[in-house]
Image (cartoon, rainbow, N blue to C red; front, side):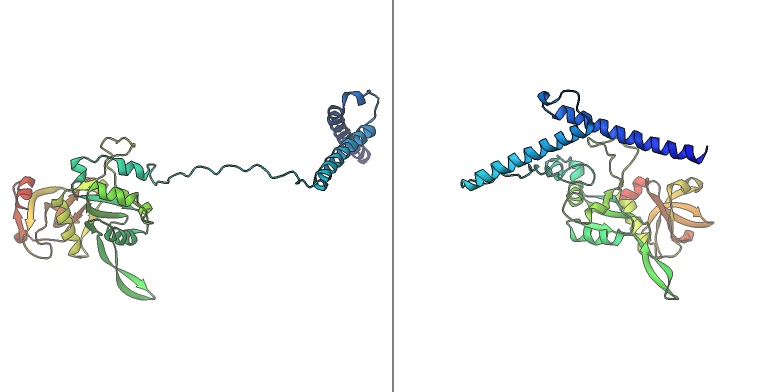
Length: 304
């Protein structure tokens, strides 16, 4: 394609654009003009001038009427834009239910009893949530920690860290915990129930919260409080490789009164405590002399 052809095409495109603009103005002007003023012979310039002059005339007439009203002692007509009504205030809730639902909820006798509930905590909020739950009307709160060695400014230092990150245990009724979670505490948005996926759902579409029996919870806390570096937390997906033995009670040493089942973990004899659906925790190595055999788990419950 030659340069002259390119120039001619560019001019043609520009010419077409101008004609389209003129046609649009022609269309709007024809519909805006009064029927008696259109005779079909006006050119584009005439139409534009007629359209512009009529707009100017309308504005001048409106300004004249406003000036006349003002001279006669009246007020200038208000030109305020219509105001929109504010949106309705919506009561916020972190899980989709309102605080009114909690206040009006009818709790069963089982939900009114105190139990060890497992709570999920948002990442890096374990300690703050623990302190907030203690300051609320929660009877007992347990935060499992252990000693770890970290380098701080080039020096090895022992510090406390969560043994099971993201989990807290609260001994309370369901009603009191609901009041905390849906109350005004700023930390409540970081605390949720640990749900049991194998149970049915309630009317709000949620599974039942996980609770830990007092026997397992008592032994779990004793193992954690021993603060032994050889304590192991075993997730559910790794428990299938562990062979569990008989029910026993530890009668001496740092794990005294721990009740669980014997097991071999990392080639060491230990006592294993199951937190169903959450994890298992094992003691350090224990000799047979410190183990008292028990017949069944029911016998454990009777003696506790």
